[in-house]
Image (cartoon, rainbow, N blue to C red):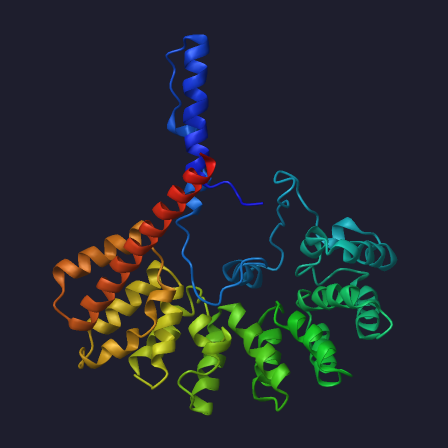
Length: 366
């Protein structure tokens, strides 16, 4: 069934209000606060290779920076506070029973409870030992193994991430390797986990190598940026991993990582165009960094090559568009002017696409 668009909702609200006015003789008209807030969501930036059905990359970065941050409620009950696992369960046995029950329906709320739990949890070591055993056991049903593997990935513990690495290496089949690799891509943790993943980026096992690159890509931290840049420079492939939707061009840098990518762009390597994409992924601060590099370039005409494919990584939010308008008016640098043009064109395309979708849905409603 198709989702109802924000435009259609507004149309229905207006029609309903008109009917109420006619029937009751009321002169009250709907206020802006009565309209659905989902209309603003339609302006969210669309970036290539981004997954939205899992934890967002910016959310992953926040969790890495604060492992003990409170967990909020799920979609079904947005006001409900979900307790972290150490607070929700009194023992390893109780926690394992909850996880095995959650695996039946791939319960996201259970996964939230076990996302970077308190490392001082008294029963967690025993619990994770049981999870590792079950996740590695071929007699454990496949869907259950996938869920348990994800529990290991989001634990923030190096021994659990190492278990997934070993599982990919020693998997009895390609399907089994893919199952563990998909979980490994979701790994969360501090620098010890990121460094462990970084060590696998030169693995001879292609599945392990690409899963590790994806996991590092998802972190968005300064260390992750350094590892990705080191990897692409060593391998000498200017488009390394970009076609698979991972690597530098798909990273979303946090505040501390932006200068790392900016320096990478400044050095003008053959792969520096990936650094431009990473900066653009970061939103307004990253876009400002790209403009800075272009405007201070000794060869602005050649820098137009850095903007290849940039339109897939640009947000169409109002602040970015205002920056592009200002740069277009004040700057004669050809590369900077080109970036401003791309941003403005992307914004226009997004607006036209939204208008066309809304018109199609209104036609369907009629």
